[in-house]
Length: 82
Image (cartoon, rainbow, N blue to C red; front, side, top):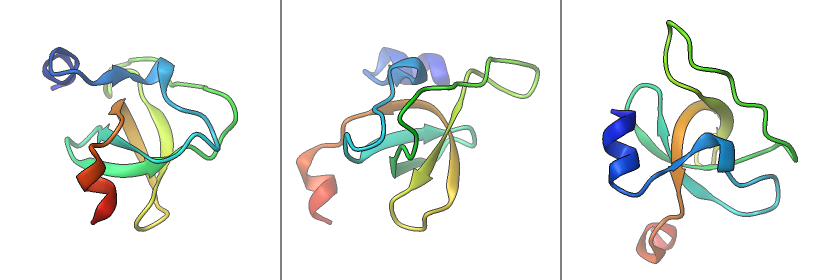
């Protein structure tokens, strides 16, 4: 799943936007795509292990729940309008 997302133009989590840089789309460990923000002013990704690929915790814009992001990209403008 991660390899396909990276081929399709998604970015790795070691370049994810920091606190205050706006909302972005994330691909979660479970394969869902959600609009999220980073609450941290630093990056501290969890290394890949037997449970999954390299991931980082971000916060959902809609529900404020934590999400385990494995890839990210800037949303198209029509995503932000809805």
